[in-house]
Length: 455
Image 1: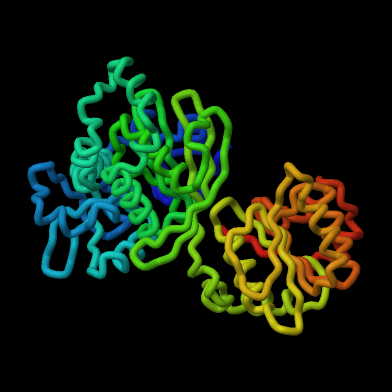
Image 2: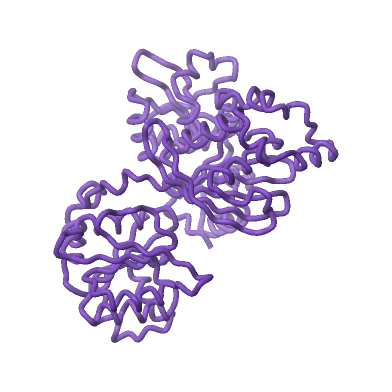
């Protein structure tokens, strides 16, 4: 069950004796089951009314509760926050006074969010408390309209006459020449705008998801998914076809998963995108992993590690042998950290080999090998071949199974430094995970140099 004891809102209610352990357990169970916002559950369960809840948050933030209407939000006020920022931070401007913007957030109890918002806007931010439902409603209405000329693009593409409820129209759309549709100027422009917005918002992944009644586009930023204003459902096939053309995939194959790669220049910035398609009930789902080449230029000192952790990492990767592991969830920057380590170690006197699935960036001076399981080039087989290539340092994309882990340990025992990643929740979980794979504990203790967990 989700642990909500550390949630700021729950903490405020417990301080005031407004929720007991049994009620908290019920709220936690409902939150875990439905994923609904906590304030909605608290109000629906009758534990507190919405007005009291807003007042408690305002008192905690030393601010006030504002009751604004849609008419109060003039175009001049709404322009104070760009649409992309409003959608990312789930906030709306309430008033503007010179260089100060009064802002209401869907989650006002996140101080880091407030600081980051002020930095992004380049203005002084004064937080006020408003009904979160109203904030979300305004974001959906006002900032969806500013999110781009989706209707104009649809009209230019000749798809504006298609009726979403008309099955015949949908059949006609899927029967179009996909290549011609994908190369049409409006679709090309729309896809480029989506990619550019995602890069600007520092997204690590871009999701294109077709459903029965809608076509959803979401970005993952700092581990959380944010939805952009949904484009019309009729754009699903042309947009996904355009991405497949850019990735040089088989545009006619819509029954099997495909993987590809796109290199684009957006705003003078060269970005690689790893493409994965997955057939679903209502069309192909496409996920793009954003691989920012500027990450290659990052030194360890630029990653924002605390000084003591940075020194420990630098000390670990300078060892002549052993295993250094980076753990964390998808999109947390494990690869960026490892590449920064390799950049530090990439010297003329060291031979470095990497095996990756796939090779995300090309690094000068380092031999990089892509995994190709269809022909037998697995992580384990590549590692065995590496040991005959006289390497000093080996980077292993991921320790996935016992065989791979055993070869990595063998490499470290024979005088090689091995850098790798592992999917665990925290640093101590790495040892548990390796034992669970079947690695002998005495081998772990004799080879594991350090584990870095990040999110």
